[in-house]
Image: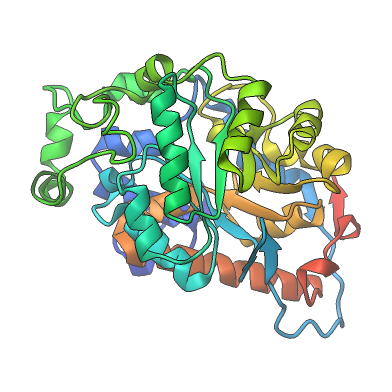
Length: 391
């Protein structure tokens, strides 16, 4: 057990890192919901590897450099942002806390950060576009229903989203054994096996039952699954998403969208080159948080060779496993334009809603700033592979 988890985490003020938020979220959520956030595919080897990979590289600081207050600002996908941290798109957020995507959007806007809205979000594209002006992208699942695909593109365009990110690693669902064991579905299905867990979390249950009705508004005009009809995420992927998604379809989607276009889930150099060839503006080096192909490489382990291959043609974003500001500094030193993560703020959302997300982002910003100061770097441009040594 990590040092971070040895003390009791009972309130937001006790949270000083991502591990603390995870501990508090575990206390406050029914176990099927917590394990949906926390779980991954098969033996969850890849999920654990995503974070452990950062430990294979050491930072080598420079001293007496007069770093002062380092400038963390940068440009990502054409938008000037305050720091190179993106809040990755994640589904079903109002199940974790009733604030849901509204909390994440508000925090991202205050901090001038990119954030993503999932196709399976619980707040609609139109509301996000109307209420928050910060840089935002729609995470796009490619469905068998071509009408739904076209509608998502048009709605994102009308809502003035800044980018569309096609997820490319979900042609079939990963084997999410924790969800199978807990019986997690969306909306939640109460069974004799899990009812006690829901009943012993009355705050969560009251919010779910008596606040705004659960819905997936980006999908509910076309499909019942996941909105009125309860279904597991694994079954949703396997029944609704198109397993025939290919490069031709991706290129057509880029053309239909016509704006800034990103591919999320690139892990090989060959695919990175092909993404550049079809005109992608950015790629997210990602394995879906370890939820898809267990036993795959960690994004950080693949980052250097992908940057070397296409870093002069597309922006390379490292997605997954990030828990500390030093992880961000290591990824940037290898050539990533920015880093992105889901669990790093989802635990905080589940623990305390919008104040939790705010505290998580504040802590990570402080960690990045402190790491830059201790490295002797005044700006992100000062980071390079000279700062690193591989074990």
